[in-house]
Amino acid sequence: MVRFSFSNLLKEVVGMLNESRKLFLKNKKLMFSVLVFSLLLNGLVYLFNVLTITLDITNLTQDLNLLPTMDPSSANYITQLMEVFAAFGLFGVSSDIFGVVSFIINLVSVLVIVHASALTYNDENVKFKDIVVRTLHSWKGPLVTYFYICLSSLGYWVFFVTILFPLLWLSSASLISFAAVSCVLLVLFALFASYLAIVWYLSLVVSVLEETYGMQALGEAVKIAKGMNPKLFLLNLFFGLLIFGLDQIETLGSLVLSTFVVMFLLMTYTVAYFQCKSLHGQDFESLRDAEYTILPTTSLIGAMP
Picture 1 (spheres, rainbow, N blue to C red):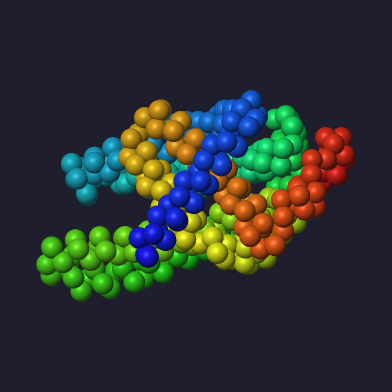
Picture 2: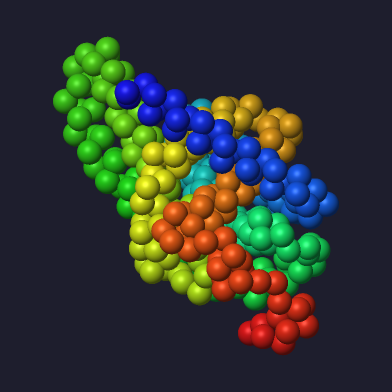
């Protein structure tokens, strides 16, 4: 009986992935434009990382390697030490800027992908410029939700590390036990993070498509995800393993594939959003009419803050 249920669950997961594939093919020109746009944004992040973060790390490493070869009582040692502090400060500034830029670019990518996916799902014939206008119009709510998600993720990491260090210290007497405990904890952490990500991803879609954001969006995501959690959990595991594998290959091709996978993930969660709403009593037509009907570009521009 369990095997049969799991088989049906896998079929549902494959069915949702197939719906996302059809969604991409439904408006190939729009979706391809969105993909190229996301690639350009991620390319900017990659270049920024190479030209700033990587360069700062290289300079800091070189300065640190010179210190052991110098006499600590010499004036040159003090000068070199000051250069190390300066390089470390520059690395900190670059890291902060990189974090802000990544945050903004990730948010913009989410907005563009979810808008394009929802409009295509609802059979709206739109162009890329319409998606840009919607993105400019509706960034405030998703920004708040994205901030809450980042805080939740950070809190989860802190909680994990708080538990990890005492357990690792207790198992440090044996290398085998240390490795075993580390692997078990990492697997448990990844599994639970995949479960939490159901609410995180859905709340982003909710905040883009509805006038709901922050804790309300997270609460709405928890509510509509009921009945869909097993399916979405397996989807998160699938995409998580795929993205993790691509991240281990530091090539331009892996960057392109990772961008496409993330886009496909957000498309799948947009499909999941409409399925969740339908599952909780809202049919497709009411969702289409009440929640996401395309507005004229001129009216949107007039409504922008």
